[in-house]
Length: 330
Image (cartoon, rainbow, N blue to C red; front, side, top):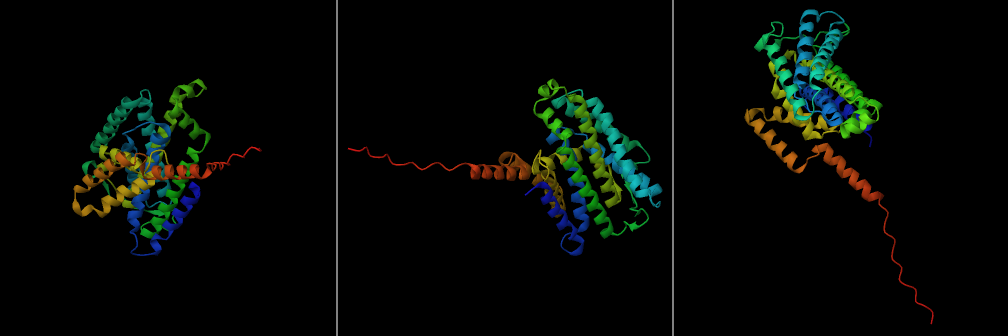
């Protein structure tokens, strides 16, 4: 079964969520979709480009703050929602270009530490700027009306808009991964020296991937701000940056559906184990240890590996039967 067939089946199931009251809370599903896109954006950088970044919360939060601030001021305008959403994504891409332009000159742990340091600057600015709400964050962000036609204050209307945005974002990532650009990124990841010898500017492609990943993380952040009407400092914190790493590793690095599964696992545990308080982080940590110890490819990665091994065994030709030696004539 192809990735697009599986995704179409998933979207078909998600369409039914608001139609069956009491089955799954739509707000919870929208949170999973937002964080699923966030994890997919990070996986585009880690799984398909080979770069480890600790700055993705900065992109998520930047888009959320910009989208929220514009919605508070212009949310009543018919074009307020798409304009605020687009501005949030553009702001995340600009921050990604600034951070990536400085960090891409280094490799390995040095690249990761530079992204971490620069993301902390974004966190500091979010605390200091007055328009971000400081420690209180942005609260009471209106959902507005989409093109003056769809009232997004209704959870059901917001759910279907979020589902459409989620589907569009995932299909865009799928197209990028399977495009010539995506193949070049994987070639640079697997053997940078060889890719350079073939004439590809590895640094330029890695920077493009970084900015694209930042824009997609901002896409998720803008969606999250519209759904919850709230942007807090947690959205730009180091905790969120490490959480998206956990989601990606749990689901499966370098797989399309892995980050979605990882996001559903982490968000689901946080939601349904909220009654135990901070112990939920201990539970998630234990699950992560088990995954790294016994399922290093992640949930989806191990499943795909098992499918490939099964297909390889099925395609292996059967050994020819041994014929008994023919007795020589006397």
